[in-house]
Length: 162
Image (tube, rainbow, N blue to C red; front, side, top):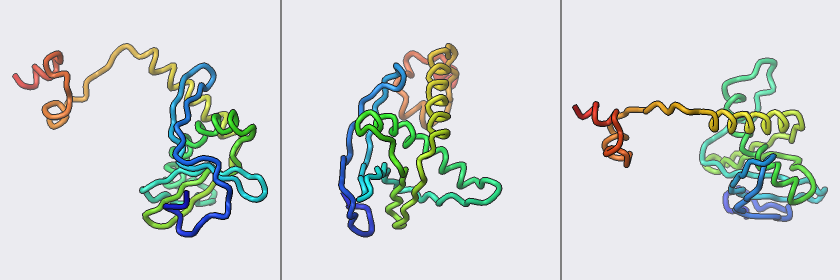
């Protein structure tokens, strides 16, 4: 693709803006993978374009807030890695963010342990969502009055309106 990159890539493009429909251990999943490249050594790079500026890992003894934010964004790419393995027979070697507004390219090496933790986190979240039976409202004036389409059915909205 190279549209957002600051310089053209010499890598082989495997896919661009790919709608990936797959199942993670019986849970259906749909994701949109921005870019997958393969370098001259056969290494796969999974690349996500971000308008947000992410900072590369600090590599200090104690993780920073930026490291924690990066870890949160990496969860998406680790989930996409499940699909990459199924499609190409190998996990990506690098998980990358092309922060195109600032021309910053952040890359992390794929980590098997983090991958397994992410898959388990995902499956646990799905179980939590399925088990949830109480959905408390988030009453906020603008949302309730201008966005939500449930005013005719919402007891909380009726109470708010008096």
